[in-house]
Length: 571
Ligand code: C2E
Ligand code: CA
Ligand code: CA
Image (cartoon, rainbow, N blue to C red):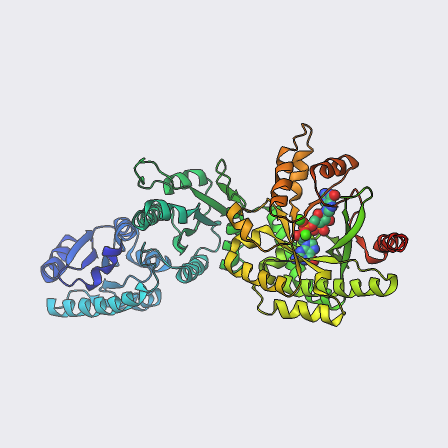
C-alpha cells in the first residue's frame, strides 16, 4: 500500500493511464501516440471503466474518457468518478467532438479536453503530462492526509471525506463503526513492535478490502483504533471476523489479537461527524473486556445517559452558584471497646437538582472526574466540611474530624496542598481534623507523583485514608512503601464475605494485612449487627455503614455530635 502511493516519486515506473474508448480505430491511434510513454489500461465500456477505477484508483495517474460510449455514457462515468470522495481527485480528460458538452464536463469536474479528431501526438502528450504533473503535486500534499504506517487516511481527512460522502449520499443509511484492538500494548510488549506493526498493516489491508467492496471510507485514528463510515449493513460479526485475520505471533503460533467493535447504526446525519463516532466509541467501550461478545451497539439507553450527562454538565455552574450541592455526613464508629464510639464522619456530596430531584454521586462524580469539574465541586465540599468541623467544635465543644474524598484528578492539581492548608487555617483547624480519602486506584495510576504529594501532605499533618482498598492492583511491596494512616476496605469484601454461603476468610486476610502495616482498618458498607460483631472479632477497628446510619444532612448528624459530647463529659 505504502509503496504504491509512493510511486509518484519513482520516475522509472511508467504512469498508468486508463483509456476509456469503445472505438477500436481511436484506441489504436491513441496507443500509437502515447503508448510508449505511459502504461495504458483500456476499458471499452463505462461499466468496465468504473470497475477499473474502483479497483485501481490508487495507481492510476489519469483517465482519458470518451463521452460517446455504449451503456453508461461517458458523462455519467465522469459524474460517478467525481461524486465519490475516494476517486474524486483523479484527473479526467474528456475526449469529444462535441464542443457543447465541454461546459457540462467542466462543471462536473473534468480537467481538460482533447478534441476529436485527435491533434498531433505531441499536443496530446503535452496535455497529459501537464495534467499528470498537476495531479502529482496535489498528491504529494495528499500524502500528509494519510497515516504513514498503514496508508489509511488520518482522522482529519477521514472526517472530511465522511462529510463529502454525506453530501453526495444524503439519503443512504450509513453506519459509524469503531474497531479497537484489545490490549494492543501487550501485543507490542510480548511479540515486539515489528509484529505489532505487521498486525496493524494487516488489519488496514483487511479494512480497505472491505471498504472497496462495500463502499465508504476508513481511517486509523489512534495507534490501535480504526474508524469506518460505510453504507448501513447488518453483518457486523462477519466484518469483525474478516478484519481479525492477522498473522500469528510468538512461538506458539497463535493469534493473540482480539478486536472489539462499536456500532452506531444508521447515524443521525444532523450530528457532527465526530459526535457520531463518539457514540460508536461509547458502544465499543460498553463491551470492553467482554470477550464473549465483542460487538457493542449504540442504543437508546446510551443515548439517554448521554443526554443526561450533557444536561448535568450544562447545569453545573448554576448548581455551584445556587448551592444545589449539599454535603451529607455518615458517621464512622470506633468498635474496639465495649460500646462503639463516634470517631469521625465522611462527607458525601449530594445534588439537589431543581428538575431531577436528588442525583446520586454515583452518577455525577465519575462524569465530573472525566471532565475535570470534580476539582471545583471537591473544593466546595472540602470547604463546607472544614466549616462544619469548626461549627460543631464551637457549638458542642468536641472535635469530630471529617474525611473528604480526594479524587485522583485533584491529586494532579499543583495547588492542592495550598488549597487544603487555606481551608484548615481559615477555620482554625489542625490538619489532622480534615481526613483525606484517596482511592487505591489513584495510587496505582501514577504512583511516583502521587506518593510524593501524599508524603508532603502527611508531613504537614494531614491524615490519609486509603479508600476502596482491595479494588485496585497495589502490589504488596508497593503497599508497604505507601504513606497512609488507615485502610478502608472496599465494600465488596463485606458483600462477598456475607453472601448466602458465608466465607469470611478473605475479609479476615485483608484485616490482618492492614494490621501488618500497622494501620487501623475501616470497614464500610456494614449493614447488620452480625456483620459488626464478626468484624469486631476479626480485629477491625472502625465501622461505617447503614447499620449505624445512612449519610444524613448536617443537622441530623448533630445527634451523634451531641452524644459524643455527653460521653466525653462523663469520662
Ligand atoms: P465511597 O467514597 O466509597 O463512599 C461510600 C459510598 O457507600 C457512599 O455512596 C455511601 O453512601 C455508601 N454507603 C455507606 N454505607 C453503606 C451501606 O451500609 N450500604 C450501602 N449499600 N452503601 C453504603 P455515595 O454517597 O453514593 O457515594 C458514592 C461514591 O461517590 C463515593 O464512594 C465516592 O467515591 C464518590 N463521592 C461521593 N461524594 C464525593 C465528593 O464529594 N467528592 C468526590 N471526589 N467523590 C465523592
Ligand atoms: Ca470515600
Ligand atoms: Ca469506598
